[in-house]
Length: 149
Image (cartoon, rainbow, N blue to C red; front, side, top):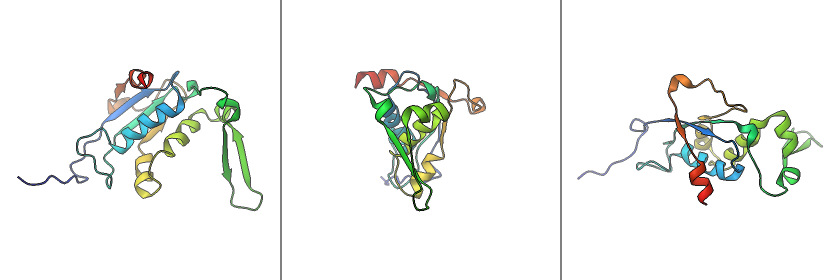
């Protein structure tokens, strides 16, 4: 019997729609990052992008536990001296609600060109509508997985 080796030609990519309404940010991010990596597939290989496309809707209705909404701070730097900027979670949710979900998921992916390739398959939308109906995405209910933990 020959050993099966996963290649990019054998990878099949599915499309998933995840509703983020009422879910915790970290719990959602771990599940979506696992889908983007492809860890749910039997032919997963850590050196290949085996993951699926994921569309996250209702990002504006994501939740945090405790007082994290007031205490959580996001930093970015312009590259110039004194260019460190910070913004609180609630400020980010007012201006760009999808960015908080994107940053949480991106932090759980590999920090190399493979991780950037996986991140390109993520689509996040603040509201319930998305333009990816032509791909016939499957609705994934994370409430049963996330609530049980």
